[in-house]
Image (cartoon, rainbow, N blue to C red; front, top):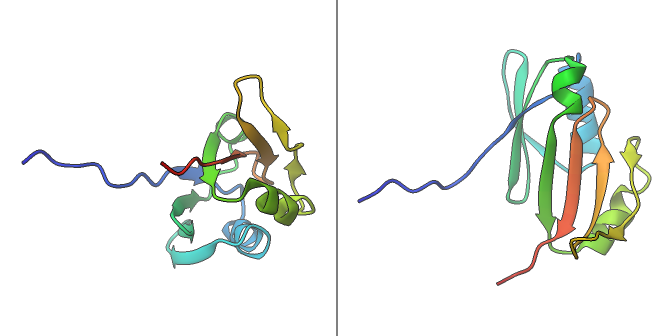
Length: 118
């Protein structure tokens, strides 16, 4: 039997302070802290997981982008509009998908879109 890929958990820069990054993701974005280690931590919200790593390399952070499918884009946009991050407008993109993006304090871009259930 051929092995099957079942999940991907990206390593993303947390900036220079893991406690500050964990507070941001937990308090403002609704993620749970799954584990913490030396300079790293795992976070999860529903079916999406990230591993945060202490790293304040802005080149890495400014070039990191993750597209996250959600079940209710409008409600999530309302939830995230006022978080202390750069939240872009909810809009229909030229490629036909409604989405919005957020630049978190470390510089990473999170893009949210309505996930079509098949």
